[in-house]
Image 1 (cartoon, rainbow, N blue to C red):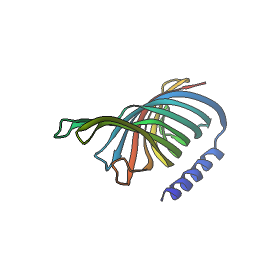
Image 2 (cartoon, rainbow, N blue to C red; image 1 turned 45 degrees about the vertical axis):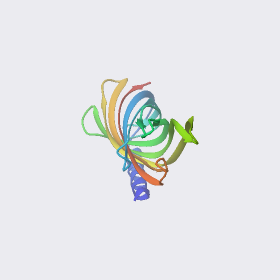
Image 3 (tube, rainbow, N blue to C red; image 1 turned 90 degrees about the horizontal axis):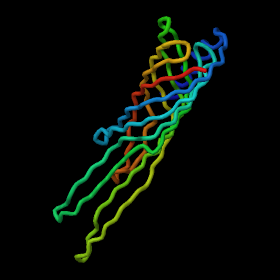
Amino acid sequence: MEKLLLVTFLTLSLVYTSAATANDTWYIGTLYSAQKTKPMNGRDFDTAGIIVGYQYNEYIGVEVRSSVGHSGYSNTWSDPDLSEYEYYEDVGNQSSILLKASYPILDSLYVYGLAGYTNTKLEVGGSGQFSDSNVDEDYSFKHSLSDSGFSYGLGLNYQLNEQFNIFVDYQALPDFQTAITYVAQNLDWNSTNIGINYMF
């Protein structure tokens, strides 16, 4: 299904490109992303990052997005022996390269589709206490997990003026193969993004 979507997206992009004139516009921007995984108790992650893009014409462009996590999941609990444990997960970094196909629906409003490749690195860590023969020993751990694959989405772009535009989009990110909870899982991962771009 994902391959069919990619082929359809690329075909439509080429059709639009052939009917448009090039305008060779570069842009940079910032974005905020609210992300959710499931099933794993609906983990929520927030990331912030930058965009570098190239708009070939009114209909087709390419952009690179790079973000880091700033708000993830954490938990603290105690066992009957009053030992305290901490655990956290957060996005270490996330990078995407995306083909962007746009279509104007009003003078300054565009709908667009995204398709490309996304890599996500998840940071996992925590601390606790190990008891053995009446000896308590503190410990901590930290490691990272990464996964990558095809991602796609839809969005709206509003042109404020010749230099600035604002956007909102939704992306289905690659399923994440993980064993965070000591059981191998496939996590469905999606994001809702908002941001602003500056055109050169």
